[in-house]
Amino acid sequence: MTAAAAATATRAADRGARAASRSAVAGFVLALPPVLVVTAFVGLPVLLALAFSVGFTGGLNEVVAAVGQNVHRADGTMPTFDAYGDVFVTPQFWDDLALTLAVTVVSTVVVLLLAGGVGLYLRLRGGWLARLLSTVAIVPLFIPVVIASWAILTFTSADGFIRTVCTQLGIDGPTWSYSVVAIVLGSAWTSLPFAVLMIASGLQSIPDALIDAARDAGAGTGRIVRTILLPMSAVPIVIAVTFTAIGVIGSYTVPYFTGANAPTMLGVSIANYFTSYNQPQQSLVMAFVVFLIASGIGALYVWANFRSARREGRV
Image (cartoon, rainbow, N blue to C red; front, side):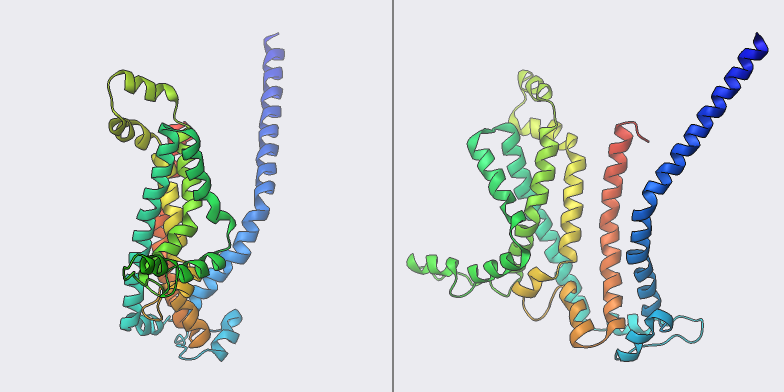
């Protein structure tokens, strides 16, 4: 009986192991197509671009190297960083980088304050006004960025709505078209819906019992926000901040329509170097600068997901 039981247990363990192996293979097969697509259409172009930026102009980079201007070629297998030198010694690049970082920080802060305000009001007060605010905040999601950029440009122009209203009141209103203010307004407008959805959903998931218990203990609204709502919704807030910052730092349409000719955000500058100046190698250098900054911001997203998974016991 003991030998039979051991044999049965062994067969059951073998069947479990085979089932687990089949499950692992099936999971790998299901995950393989998107991995291959990302590798083919993202990973390979990034590697080719990196190789081209350091002077490896052969293979798939041969055509762009032949038609591009001011292309630096590697000496055999030794890379060259002359293209990086061309970019980094240009004062215009540093002006564009400073503008890009400033617009990204200011736009992200504005979006965070607006989305957080709407989410907190919806969570603490509710009612028709809160629902109206949340609905209005999501409206930009359904408006194309091109139309929104053009609307903001005309709204802030010398003959736009702001100056028209100010003129009726006898005030000399400001002109914000083709300025940093217009870029910030456009970036905040286009980034607000996702942040509102993310932060509001995070705040709504907090149990009412915690808020009621804090109120019963004598805590005011400010203390509830500081000690309960914000800490427990930290992960959605971090995700909203990272997505907003990455979207703004790599934007093109909003700064192209609403910003000045110089300095420009790096997204516009990259396009100018690639198309207008026909310097693809230098444009790739700036693109990798944006990529490194966005990777640093994306680390916050990874940390937020890891923290959430650890809190839920998944890691």
